[in-house]
Amino acid sequence: YGGVTSLQMCKQGNEHYYITARTSTESRSQTDKIHLRMKLIGERGSTITGILDNEGRNDFRRGEDDTFVVPGMKFVGKIKCIEVDVDGADKWKFDYIEIHCDRYRSPFYFQNEDNTWLSTDLKEGENHLKLC
Image (cartoon, rainbow, N blue to C red; front, side):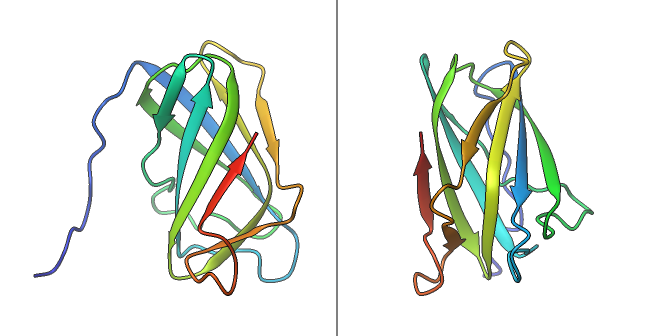
């Protein structure tokens, strides 16, 4: 049993979300071995992304921005909170996450004010982070 090699997300709506994550400049904050998912919580409900990955690109490099275009999402109105979940074989630290959609061109910002590391190894960081 080789396991699942890929998953396809079911379309949740017609909105395109643009998610930009800035990886910290701190030593060892970069990774390309983490699987990042996000729940966007807004005035009109919530929607969940699949794994954020730009195929063929080394995402989450130290000090760099990575933008992910996520189509077929539910429109949630003004985003109030995000929940970030990770799995994979590494740790990652970000400075902020910026989100906008086709209906709201002004971005919503979520700062990693507590400098939380994300990891599936709970000795290295948290595997779930909620920011509001």
